[in-house]
Length: 131
Image (cartoon, rainbow, N blue to C red):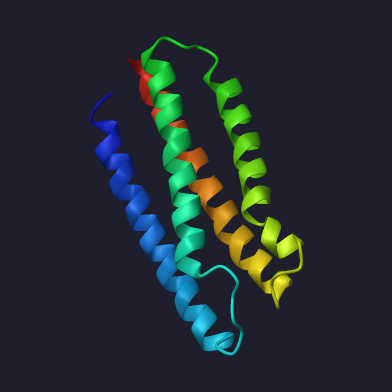
């Protein structure tokens, strides 16, 4: 169980760097004249931090013998959504010039990170079931 964390971190850092690189390139090529309220690196740091936090909480709870991990995952995912809304409150309050672009720049990586998280947790759950 202790060996899964370094592999998860390597995958998370890799996917974060890859997605950030692609997103930054596409944004600078197509939308270089638009000024964002949140820089892209802040968005990726926020999303990667939440994915890591969810993985660690689930991993710790499983180590303690908690058996309802799927319920915990749903609760944590809903909490992530609430934190995303709180994170985006300045955009909803009208402080951004291009709110639609800012929200799009947030939610596209958010859902890609969610897909990554689901796949990685599925792999983790399967490993734990076989042990």
